[in-house]
Image (tube, rainbow, N blue to C red; front, side, top):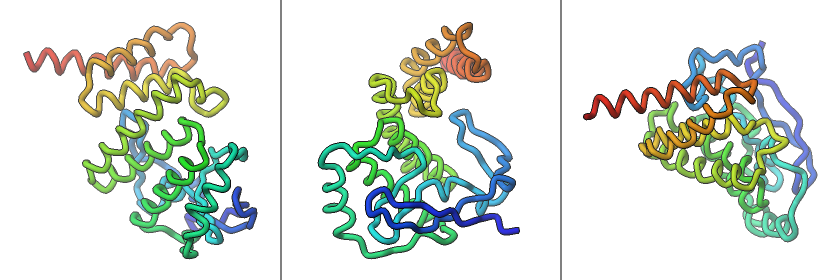
Length: 227
């Protein structure tokens, strides 16, 4: 059985249908995880991150399953002028290389920005792009997109636009803290990890609380070792 299968998508902009590859769920078996939820797979071919963004070969609009169907005023026109009018028909519907996957994320980010998608949706794109760069040992690009993800996660938390999505408040607070930690800003990281720990009694996500406590302890130990 092939690792990949074809999924049919209807473009939100031009309404035409096309196929995009996805990894079959039975093959998505992470071998390990990082503390910011980045997953690693035995086979690079089975990495679902490569196929997170789908790109319409007809008009160039790129989206994920997290995109809403609603277009704020003037955004559809902006997409048609800035993406569709300049589209040269490149097709990302087959198996993807690392470089092609990177291209789809950048198209997705541009599409989401023009569409004025939620902060939480943009954050998810930036975060996954950072993970892709990490898997390819491109640390400078990884840090660049972690910083952008952090900005969007904070904006999402302040605007409450993560409500009614797959992202819980506790998980969001943890991710903000963890991104601050990975970017070397321990003081800010501790503030957010403390907020997670403070919700210990009211959340069912005890694993996230434990992870926040572990990261907080690691920062303390590192500070002690540096003295």
